[in-house]
Amino acid sequence: MPQIHAARRALAQQRIAESGADGALITIPANVRYLSGLVSSNMAMLLPAEGPALLGTDFRYAETAERDCPDLEIEIERQLEPALASLAAGRGWRTLAFEAHQMTVEQHSVLAALPDSPRLVPLGHVIEELRAVKDETEIELLARACALTDEAFAVLLGAVQPGRTERELAIMIERTMVDLGAESAAFDTIVASGPNGAIPHHSPGDRVLQRGDLVTIDCGARHSGYHADMTRTVALGPPAPWQRDIYELVAAAQLAGIAAAVPGADVGAVDATARAMIAAAGHGDHFGHGLGHGVGLEVHEAPMLGPGRTGRLEDRVPVTVEPGIYLPGKGGVRIEDTLVVRAAGPEMLITTTKELLVL
Image (cartoon, rainbow, N blue to C red; front, side, top):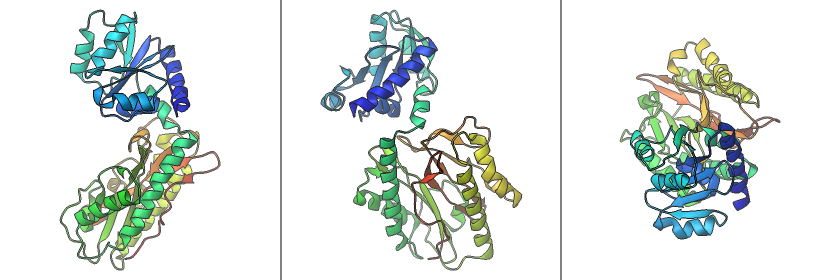
């Protein structure tokens, strides 16, 4: 897909030129992959405001880079940041933009001390902003990741029963996703049972599931680098009235959040739509995280939906919508879907039912 990556670089170069920099040093792995197509644990890109880009990697990935990025000049080095910054200096660049939100102080000091080093200026989140709006090829890959997640969750449901441990179920769904064709799990699976459900990012442990538990399962598959994200809460046996009440409230808040996620919507306002419903029912203090986030080459990426967040949604932006209620010492509920913001209405990529499943 060299043409797709070339088009992405052209858009990035427009932004770099507008900033006044001679070029940019791109070091965030997901950003380099987005602009080049290379999959590597060590890579960086020197992207001029105008002209051909240079892709850096080390000896281990030399043949891969030549095969997968035939339209790019390849530089083989182990220490990429100083090597590419030196090349920028050799080309007479006076200003080099860099990803300040990722580069360490030590790395910056090394670059600044290079002979004839260009003036280093923060690039900002330029590439992440471009990545937020997906092309249809990316959406297809994300949809496949979500389909694998749905399939694996359906398989797992037969094993969610009293006597199983949280850790057993987490391992099982991750193995199932890979068996179905995923590259890997998109992130460490969360299985939180009973009172552990009050911990939004509980690490699955040896607690044995019991009748009467609510069990929250947060999982996702990764396919061709794209990450799915889904959460469902199920009941082991007939739910108690308080369990059904908070489940129905979270489900209603999630539907409201999904309906609000339209092109042009303010990200803070989308969050507030769902949050207000939960707060009005007296559970404002029991929903302490943001409503959702973008997904793509990273499982958490722009845009962020939450209090105090700024920006507006655009067409073809995949996001999660995931309200929750967490009652300390008792348990909790979270319902999460991955969807694509569309002008014609949200495109739901996760299709697992949101009805309360009683197992």
